[in-house]
Length: 251
Image (cartoon, rainbow, N blue to C red; front, side, top):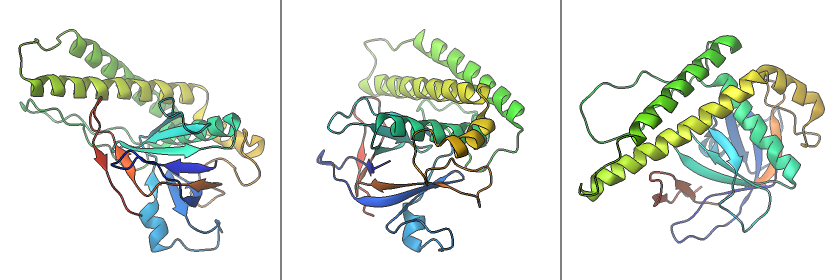
């Protein structure tokens, strides 16, 4: 994998070199080549990105560079990576989604309240304590719930006469439910294919990632996935389905 970027407020995209290390459920972005014996610096920890409840996919809406994948985090930050080949790009997509599906803890119960304003629920950053079979059932249950909720939501669209703010709230919730449906569909698919076994098998197969690109390990202290990448000093945060807010982040 070669590069990672985010969008700046002016719409410009820049690429900065890092060494990416996927260890456990955390993607570290380091300025120096990864060495197992070297302790993480404060800067490394600052640049780290958790992939719990994240979703990686091909960045079909970005056409300026080839082989770009998009990583959307649990807090809806949007990061872009550029791989050196379609195979390597797909390899990273598969590994990130596999780690997220296998290790993400079940979401917290939905808050009960009468507030009309929609807000995304917080997702736990802890590692699941469920077995793989229980994890699959949890994901399937959540997928069923989200699918039903999305269908119900779309069966009662807002009247054209309502305030623009209410229409925005409707669209935001629709955007959220659609994304969650896609995320859990992929998680279920990954686990049905044998999540942990896929991670173990990829250590020997490499799946398009050369030498140091071994799979995320079930043991956080074992061999991580590593690759040279580039990252933009800014990033986008996906708040709205049509006009997402742009937030600058200096690294």
